[in-house]
Every structure is written in structure tokens, then in C-alpha cells.
Length: 428
Image (cartoon, rainbow, N blue to C red; front, side):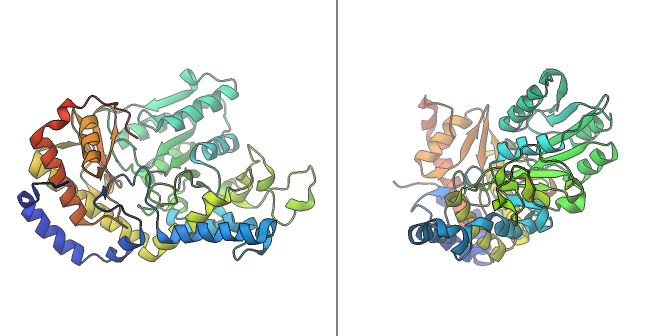
């Protein structure tokens, strides 16, 4: 299929060529599996497979084939401690000491564990603070956690409201914290719908000043934005590994526990959270690992853990600060192109310090346009009611890709063929 309109983007094409030639991360592009002719702009939902991640999965499969149960101790990187060794690699990306991080579980399971471990209500401080734009799973976890404590979430779960339905004001969050009514707060580093990056340092400072335990969902920022969790004093954090970390669908997630909470009893204890030196004593007395490792519950899923090893290798080779710089440049470039060519409005804040890794475009026909783009081999996604999300990923998206994607979009809008699309709006 051919696409027209590229010549109308001559200025941006020229600019893209200059930037691509000077891109220090350009070489990483060839280490990812990219479909010929397709422009992938959905890395904020699922990152692409790299050759490094693939090699690590194949290695573990071969170890299983050749070593059987011996892989737990005799593999090149023993499975028994693979979560801990990968935690050492990931810790610098979130600004933490190695023992404050553990690769384990999934986003929601880890949130349940952290709530069960850290929620300690006091008189008049039983409520949990979240925000009205949180990812639904975080809300569901908090609601079910409170229900398990015999508390009504209608009373004990408060959500900071959005003034525009797309972003949340830092001042509104801080004002809520300053009431002193909250035992614990859970907020996203980046709001999944709009791509707004919250001021984590200011909000964390306000939480601590008012006696509120605060945790962060880093799912839309880890791997594309540098973090300093220990530096800002966050109490906890959790994340997935399948978005910007490119560890694959269902990849093992991770959590952070500030060392000042190492003395807390584990809320959801499991055998794999035992101290490694005594785990096989097989007693019924739980002897927890030191630090975040104690919050592990069950045996790690090795085939979902392995690709993270290769993915982290690429991230460290590229450098998280270089990744962030290119990510900001890509989203700014897309924004400028879209605004100049189509006059679109955006839900994503324009300033670098408030922008995550994706760009949220506002359009009343966003769902139809998203499906039309996919038919034209451009992969975005849609979020109700009117958001088209575009996520160029620094490690495998070029500035030229952005120009070509916008050229294909131009053709779609000029022909208006998307208007006859009556398909489902539930685009993943």
C-alpha cells in the first residue's frame, strides 16, 4: 500500500533527517524486532522485543532443557537468585539501593502487598488518597484492600479530582495531603491517559511533612524517566516491566521499599520472601529476607523474568538520561508537527518537566482514527473518550518514523475514510 503526503512534510522530513543522523541512540534501533513498513507508537502499552531479551529467554529455555531442576543452582545465572541479581541492575533506574528493590509479581499484586505491609491507620487517619485519573487496577486494589479491612471505600478512599478530566494539579494533591486526614497515598508518576508527569518530589515532601505514607505507580515512567525514589524520600513504589522496559507481555514487575520500613512485618508472607540462607530449612517460622526481598510471595516466573535481563542490558548501555533526552525530543517533535499541520489540541502538558513518555492527542474521532492508523501500519492506541496516544520509544523510534506516521495520518484525515468506521472503540 502506498501513502501520499510525505512531500507536504518536507520541512519536518529535513529536520528529522538531521536529528536522526546526530542521534546517539540510533544503533539500538536494529536490536529490536520491527515489522517492515510498520511504525510502532504503542510502547507505552507494550514495548517491542529486543535481540538481547530474546537471547536471555532462549538461554533459560536451554538451561531448563539441559539442567532440569539443576537450573536453580547450576545455571550460568542461577535461577534461585535471578530476581535479586536483576534487582541490582534495575535499582539505579529508580534511584534506590539494591536491597530496596525486588523484581517480583505484577503491578497490582505488588500494590496489594505494599498496602498490606504499610497501611497502619491511626485515629482519624484511616483514609487512602489517590487521584481521579488513576489506572483502574490501582483503584480496584485499594477498594478491595479496604473492604478486606472492613472499611467502606466510599468513605475511606478519597480521590483528588481533575479540573479538566485529563490532568491533576500538584497544588490540589498537596492541599489534600495538608489536611492530615490520610494514612497512605498512592499516585501515578505519569497519568496513563494524558501523559502528565507529576511533581513527585514536591508531593512526596508534602506527604512526609503531614505524616502520610506515600507510594508511586511507576508503570508509565520506569525505563524512560530517571527516578530518585530514595533521594526524594518516597516510602514505596511499584511498576510493570512490559512498557518502556521492553521485557515482554506479562513480564515480572517490581517494587521498591524504602529502608526505613525494613522493620515492618510483611503483609502477605510467602515462602519465596524467606531469607535465602534459611529458606530450605523448611520450618514453619517465617524468617524474612532483609529489605524489599521479604515482600516476595511465590516462586518467580522464570520465562517471564528472563527477558528483563536482556532488556535491562540495553537500557544501561543506552543510559537512562540519554533515553529521557531523546524521548522528550521525540514527543516535542511530534507535538510541533501535529500542531502545525493539523491544529490539534493535546492533553499532555507541553513543558518537559510535566511530560512523560507519550503524547495524548485530543480528537472527537480518536477511536476511529486510531483504527485507521493501524490499518495504515501505524500503531497508536486509544483511551476513552477522545484520546489518541502516541508513544515513540527512544530505543527504537526515529524522528523519520514520526514524520512518516504523520504523513499517513494526513492521508487518513484528508480522505475522511475513518468516518465510515463503525468498529468497536475498545482498542487495546
